[in-house]
Length: 87
Image (cartoon, rainbow, N blue to C red; front, side, top):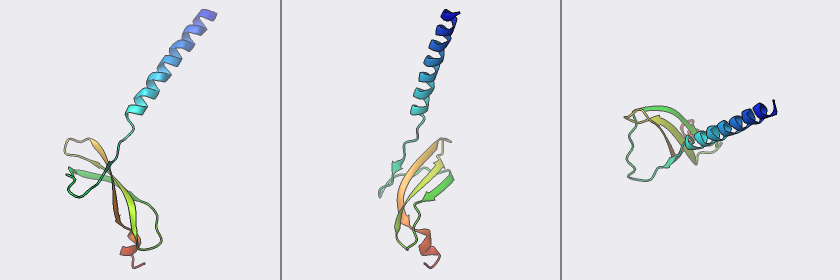
């Protein structure tokens, strides 16, 4: 019985390591926008910006699909939504 339990624990540990490695590879890498960056945007999935109570430049993040259907991530600076609301 102990051999079966030891083998099962070893298999479980190996599978856990492979799962962690796969998750590490899937972590999205965001591109930082600079003037002249070529953007291949087919569909915007989400846009998030840092909160701001004043009309100011804030960090923003866009998740989108490119023309190949792959999910991409882009960091950029923009004027806060507060400026559009007259704040």
